[in-house]
Image (cartoon, rainbow, N blue to C red; front, top):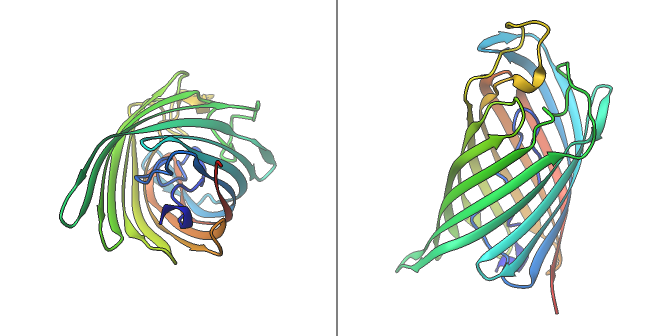
Length: 269
């Protein structure tokens, strides 16, 4: 079944964390992989400066390239690179590399219960500007550690919970991410709904003190919900549409984000 499904989607990480977790609970299988070309549009109407809502909006468009590959049955590797345009600021943002390993896989009468761990490394690949609300990132190098529980029912329904810790190597505050996802993975369709949360430790707020501010030091929290719909066109090709909405947070834009993309599934012969 997995060769027909979009098992990992490259959405991208902005300062707001526009992503439903950079990893998921599915594995490609040894020698199998996917390449994703994604595009998206964000339409934000409000901005939380600290916990104060302001009438500040912006629009962002992006493209991203993502490749996921199964090194073994229990070990996947992935790499992603987004290009982001926000007003006059446009450039490649942060390249991310991930390894995901399945520690435990227990067959049950109704399905499978799995436990996985993952590690990620992301760093800027361009000298994009800092100092305004149209920044495309925080120029932070990040080391991510994640744990994940994934339960798949034989009928195709699944639920995944992941969390961990994000270490920032610059002034950007460390954070805890949490993602809860539930959906159905079938041979003709894949769909899911998710809740994404991030809590940052400390940091400064927009329009706070000290001034002038170092935008790398912003603490960014958010609550986001969304979903993804994927349709295979053939054994090798498929397409997806995603919709998400940032509800509230700290030093974050709120509003809708839309994504779509093409997926190429391949297997090493």
